[in-house]
Image 1 (cartoon, rainbow, N blue to C red):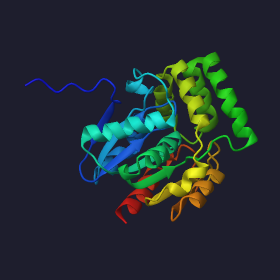
Image 2 (image 1 turned 90 degrees about the vertical axis):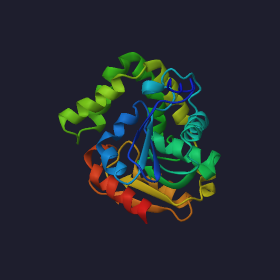
Image 3 (image 1 turned 45 degrees about the vertical axis):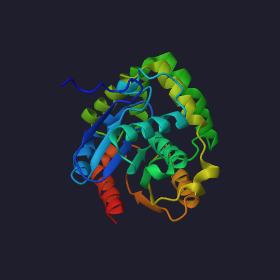
Length: 258
């Protein structure tokens, strides 16, 4: 028998493990491969689903828009394709914004929510507004590889060179024009007035030294989502996924298993 063809508008994804499903949503200008340090550990207990968001990685062939609503709709359709009614969701950095949108637009899809190093609104301060408007110009002027190296030199100082080069490679392989469009949509995301609508059990994970998404964002999420838990990982920055993977797995597993 011939294999059933994948729908042409379905995002690319990989699966690992078995058990209760866990959807991992990656950040901006990178791919689902970013979760490589934690997938094996999480797959020991879960059916882990790792998509590449529309416009990113092996889903770059899917046309705009790259709005949070569209990306969340893509993920809901992926769950339909996989026959999954409800899943735990972990969103990292901008992936946390898409996770919030998924829960808000499709509340029955998510039974537990983990929001790591993420935000409800990423243009909340003067510095963030400057960065938000500057990044598209830097991407187009430098190209993705040089921009990725700039990001690494500023935000990935805690990483060993081999790991930093790996992250740069994931970013460098993205299409610069698509990433500019995706960035602008990400900066337009604002869930502040809807946080109280998130009713599923929620864990907010913050890094004590996160300069990219400072602690005030985690506090905003924690204060806005009724009953949420807030965990701070000491000594970590925005790259805690790669510098403190065991800690991220531990707090996530305790939350999902509790």
